[in-house]
Length: 640
Image 1 (cartoon, rainbow, N blue to C red):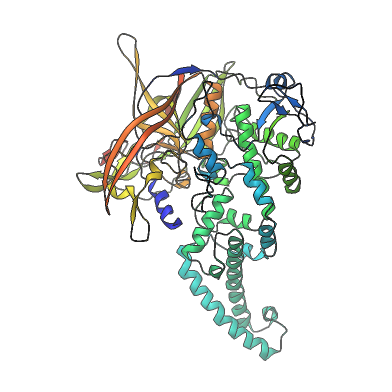
Image 2 (tube, rainbow, N blue to C red):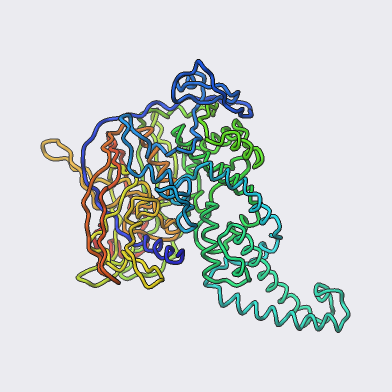
């Protein structure tokens, strides 16, 4: 059940950061990113076979002819893979044909299928927020679902704007009381209307009797909220997330669960609440929402093809793509640090994606649907994109910094309103200029549940401060729960009298504790003989299935990133840093979990490892300590 899954995600705000193993492998290097030129708007033709093109990885130009990659680069074209069988570079096959074992699962999830090809139910699909870019086949299917679009079109969405707060299941009693009062007031007002021989209730707003007019205004507000909730629920019914019988204007857990599914489908913060951005989305045409999904998919394909990471967060912020903002507001800026940084890179991704959309002819949903129907099996498109910045190269001088923001070292947990939250900034140094490329929200450690001598207690989990390096990059990492993780946090209630092991948080997978990417924070130790060794304290930068914690939560010491950003960062490093491919790292993790039964936790891989050569320097600053106490609380524990 989804309600159980929410508890599972909540648990991820408490899981520990683990220490991965070390190993060796063979060397690969990233090629120079292709140069592209800007072009006028073109309409993409259906690709036709051309006999003289013999390369297996040919791409279609806008005129329908095919071109090999080398020739495309010579013509200033970038090949963007729009095929269904696409994964980010992070999970792509290597030169020798090897690939992360998770690759096949990723492709299945992108098609909303399991490994056996069976359709996933709503609680398992919709993994875009967790780092899995959907297939364009999903968009094609949704755009072609005319019955669904007709269902949405029949709903009057205007009352949704009358909702005055982000209603959720914790407003159940408030909504119930308001609804009861609405019904009682309506009976009274109807009697007044009949007595005064008025045509309808709205006329009561103009009567000279102030108590009646005031009673009408109270009823009008309550009625508007009731109609707003009903309209939102009817949209959820159209999506198949809520039963029609539950679209009754009440706010139960069923509606909140349906809201979260809707948020996941439309790349909104999954908080189960009818917040402002969710209300705005509910009032938008369903085809338009499908079009925005296609633009988000195109964005990740363009990012992967070009090696761009510059999204405007280090400068004036992300820009609209075809007039549309594709991400919820918490993802578009580092909270409390929105001022542009000196020399900050502008939004190059937005410009590239908008150019790609225009070249493909994706101007509106109707054109997109025609395109997807013409290219039902997908295609590789050779298109002209804006030129890449001159500092882009196969090996860039990159550094990173995590500012821990405002820090309170309270001796016991105390709720704090943090104005300046932690941020990650990635820099490039070229021609003597240090340029911030991106600035993203992240997390630091805080109070967490820890198992000590069979008892669960709260201890402070500190985020290490000082210079570190990103040396090990894990694709589809797993989490190996340390002994300090309470057994009770490793099982889940199935609400049918049974309990099960929480396998998904161990991974690999989009709901794993580390998401789809882990960058280990290694300490560099130089010995007397000049040799260098590395060790880590279980701290890393990684994706997270606890999406909302990145805005308002803490971690077990690690630095969480929104999943799509963690994947972008990993792809950027593989594009622009020399690295060694170490491959799948085997482990034999076993743990007996004893809570509500006995379960055996098994993890056989640590993930697919890339090693940066040389590592990328990263420094974690102390931030601003807001308490008189300047060191971590006495009741603290190691991060791992």
